[in-house]
Image 1: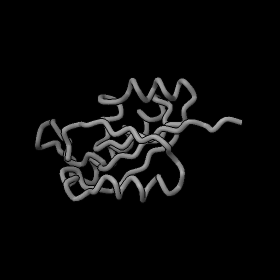
Image 2: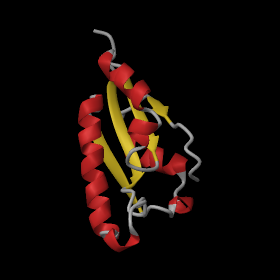
Image 3: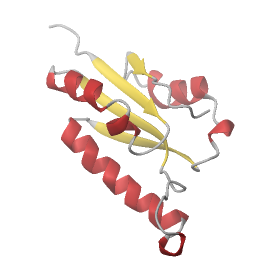
Image 4: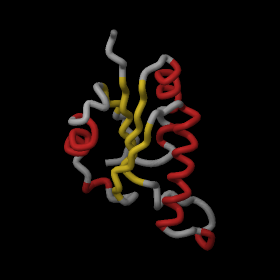
Length: 120
């Protein structure tokens, strides 16, 4: 039996999976590649509406997390994992350590997808 191909996308924020890599993720899941998503933040600071309507860090993070799970289901992503960094503080993350700690050791992924989004 052939090894099952696996892909892991490591992205900064909810919506990066759709806006930045959605076509790639949908293509590979449609081809039967097990696709996993790791998102560094919950997008807590990604509010572009009226300042008076901003729900706060925690509530916005919950909203964006729910949106991400919905998008992941449509894209066929097998699982979503959050690294727990606060939006806007990714300069504290070390990508190689995060990747190894979360996925390489477990054998969950053989090929990471690390598209640049302008975020550190």
